[in-house]
Image (cartoon, rainbow, N blue to C red; front, top):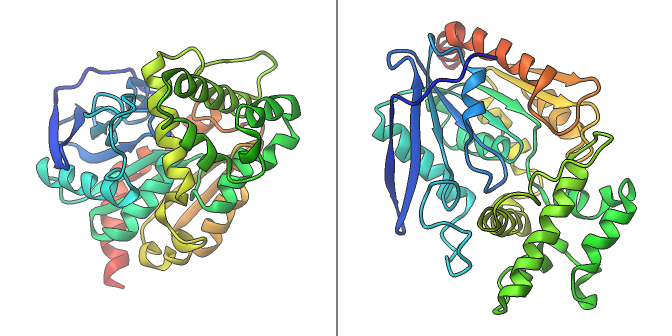
Length: 326
């Protein structure tokens, strides 16, 4: 990974509905444009995301998705309405940002939930995407949401029982994302705070495969936990506003766009079959199932991403243009 570099430009972009999206640009202002799409939903961008891009070759654009990070209004405020925070809104925000920065086409790198958003964006605007690098691949279908909120509990029985028991008894056998989303909108502040804590504790449980606990979300600031829990449950309860196989079925729209899919063999939060299915339908994709890695972005996962981004810094634009002319 490359050394971290400070942004040479940043700002807030008004994208409608009273929202302002934070963005920053790093690296080479004359370089190949690249967009980094964070996970969550609601995690926000972090400086470490810049380090996968060669700063001499790339104009690196990071942004905080609507409602999180430094973007405003912040979903950590329980009074902030999420009705205008959907996948389609985020796609439009990315397009507004691209136009604002005067970028014709960019390489899109994404992680976890961000891969769902990147796929949806590319399928809506294929002419503006030169290549994709997708790490910890998801499509946020109802099947995947059920897995991550219920089925994977078979591997973490005590943690899942505690997660389930955080809900009223009447909600424990239904859609757990819907039930927690309801608690996070409760008029009682203590109920909301506990629901956010319980949700983040469960996420910390299944993300971590290390021998010792790594309570990253639980130890985050309360407003971050609330923002994260509200946005994750909001997007998961609606299955990203996409049909059960919509992103997979629309792969022909982006079939000629080069892509590298990187997924941990031991990713219990999102098993590798999703990445594998996308790869089977995507002629221009390459798939790396990385031994010994879970739902993470560092180590060998990052090494594959760096290699792909170095390649696309010189080949993606021409390859993409050529594929569209065939």
